[in-house]
Amino acid sequence: MVDSNQFDKTSFIYPQSRYYGEVKPENLSFNVNLQEFAQRTNIICNLETNGKLSPEEAYNQIKGLWKQLKRTKKQLEISGS
Image (cartoon, rainbow, N blue to C red; front, side, top):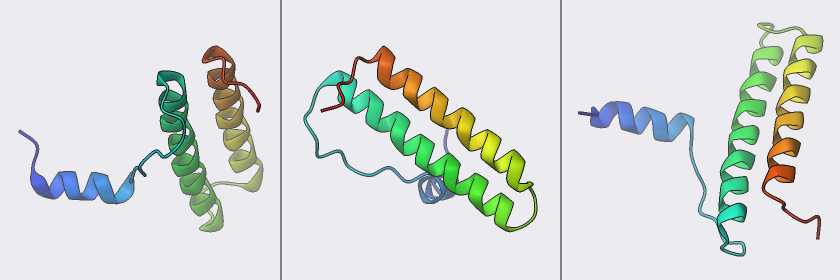
């Protein structure tokens, strides 16, 4: 059973926005990945700002996330238009 307090913390830390684009399975899947990219990038930026990560490490982690997002886009065959 999930504690409601734990659910509130998870929703606060990892919010998800409603999707308003063209509703297709590949678009919805990509949107989930895009939101995760944004959340993780924000966390990495905060860690770097607070001195917990070096600028180089933050850059490398974000670069890795970007490559992962690009692979997802290609796998889902999302067009650039």
